[in-house]
Figure 1 (cartoon, helix red, strand yellow):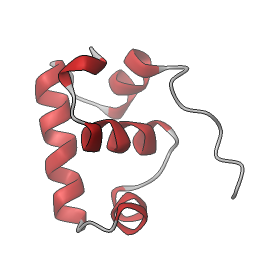
Figure 2 (tube, helix red, strand yellow; figure 1 turned 180 degrees about the horizontal axis):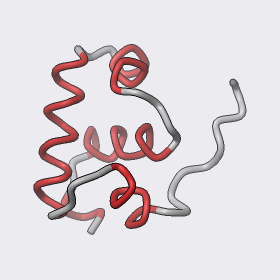
Figure 3 (cartoon, rainbow, N blue to C red; figure 1 turned 90 degrees about the vertical axis):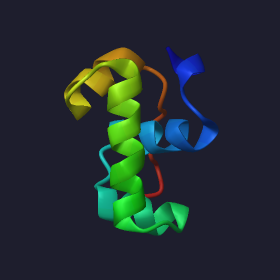
Figure 4 (cartoon, rainbow, N blue to C red; figure 1 turned 120 degrees about the horizontal axis):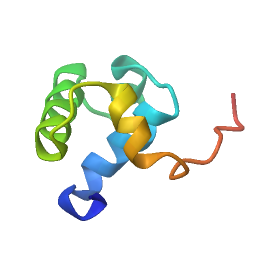
Length: 69
């Protein structure tokens, strides 16, 4: 399913799975919060899912722990 997503969408997925809020992701990726929310909506639509929990289940193991926190 990763092949359905763009590079930017995969960055959003990694951030969501790592537990970052949309605001945090926006700051980290130099985007607006609205843009992050739009990317998340496209991701959920492409993958036919409805929550970050479902997203995590699909991509579990993809993200390494964020050790700089």
